[in-house]
Image 1 (spheres, rainbow, N blue to C red):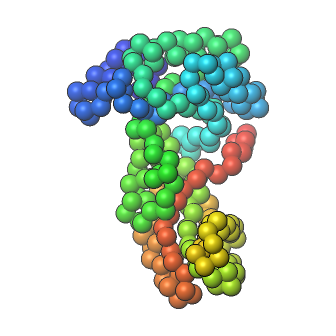
Image 2 (image 1 turned 90 degrees about the vertical axis):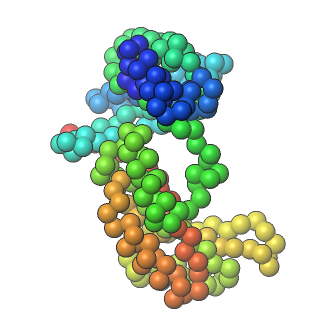
Image 3 (image 1 turned 60 degrees about the horizontal axis):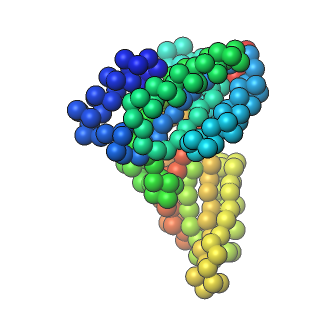
Length: 242
């Protein structure tokens, strides 16, 4: 969406006129990003201070994300401040003015602002088939995650027997999956299910998605478990190499 008043007006006009979406009437996910390459720790503390400072006005959250330039592959850590709410164009402009001023006071670069459809987190966190997972990756790209940026692919499996869950974890490790996460639901013993997640460090790209889905379904079917589908997550942010 940018950061000048003209950028904001153009973006609102586009959403209202072409996308049938009025951000003043519809909850959106608003993202404000900041950068300070030489001191990521200071940048993260700055994000926490903003959340605390404006707690009475908006329910901001902050996180450090690994950003990547799609042209030359360079990487850096960005601070992203997010809030899910309705906003008028004048409200967005005021937030940008405040963030730019505060960032400048602390020697931090305010990179800009963007927004996307609000997220139904319960639905968002459900595992997806390959087709829906591909659309999710495209959504990530539309929201600013560069194609090829590091991303965790999570393959979700479910077993109804603890012994089967245990043996399937061994099968996954033998198949080359190094990171396995286990959990179970809180139902009575007869209805209990056991969740096995195989985590892969991949990237924001659809390459190999359908093949991975087919291989996971075949492996699950051969060992008496269900393959539920994909989920995605950011890798833990690490300082980029100098």
